[in-house]
Amino acid sequence: MVKHCSYGTCKSDSRYPEKLMGAKFIPFPKPKSDLEKCLRWISCCRRPHAQLNVDKITKHTYVCSKHFISLDGPSDEYPDPCDAQTGELHRARRKIIYLSQQSESDDLNSKTSSTSTDDSPDSHAMECCLTTQTTSNPVIDSSCQTEEELFSSMDVLSWVAQVRKLEEENDRLRQEIRQRGKVSDAACQTERDTNFTAEEVSKSKIKNLFEFYTGLSYSRFLMLLVFLFPSCENPIIYEDKRKETHIDKFPLSQQLFMYLCRLRNALNVKDLAFRFNIKVQTVSTVINGVAKYMYLRLGSLSYWPHRNTIIGIMPESYKHDFPNCLAILDCTELKTEKPSSLKQQSVLFRLQIIQYIKSSCCL
Image (cartoon, rainbow, N blue to C red; front, side, top):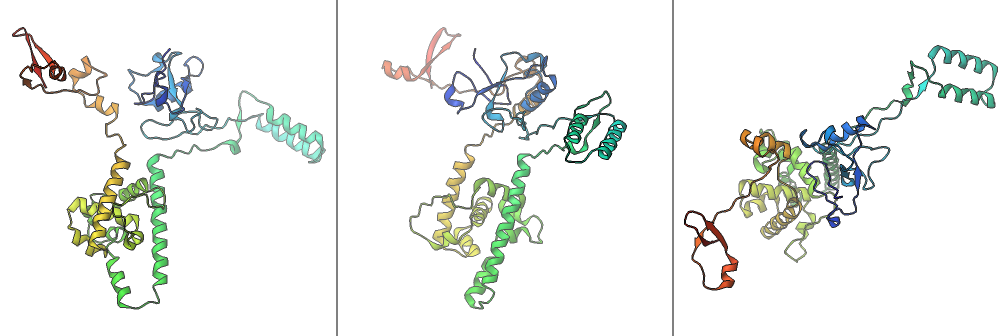
């Protein structure tokens, strides 16, 4: 039996094991055995109700382990897949411990504490009995209650961006302390030119100045910086093989900020060289390197909207006739002369024209 993944827009198929990358298929919880868990998984998959609901769950319904925190599938701490829309992970709630009635437990505790010591085996046995008794009106132990922590991927990126911002501010303060005792024209020139930075522009009193230069807000700029450069090492490969000291001392945040200024406002290379106090050749080298690196990092992202968004804006006539249609591919036919060579005819395709009951070659 062919196994398909029922999660979101996932297309995992058991017929193509090379695309699974070590993942395996986890059977979907059955409504008869565990209805609550089944409903949680259906909610996490985020598929339309017509495609995935309680009535659609069978023994051949699966979710691949790519969507769990581990490739081994669900764990005791994270028994459910991540949310297909927000990426949230829900921790498992701890089991509730039932105690006997409060009055009886208080009486027993007072009796055992007065008749036995803490180290006696009878006291330990009595405590074990107290924790295992249950009644119809349970008392929930407050020490076993834990709040469920939900962190989305956007929250994590925001926190990492704040940490990166604090690290950059720390480095900047260290450099200022080192240069505090140096009073020279070169130091004054460097201090004047370093004012045009992403952080200084974001603190400007002019409204939306950072968005004017880059097209992004400062918080989104930091999130993009963390996504492109998760580590402190510079992964950009520059075309210029010469070892330029300006590029080594040029922070990655400044390189990305300069590239966005160039892209947004089409600033001249000489203008950028003056603003950032670097060579004109360095500006060209940095812009070309950042552009190619961003193509590699952002080119792998999917720009298709979610299937729920497409179905939501679909015309009513299409919803009635084609409820699962998410894309339409069309082409244009250009009529050409029929070549005499059979090899050239095979390159073209033949379009049957019913009106004239004959065929013609088209591109």
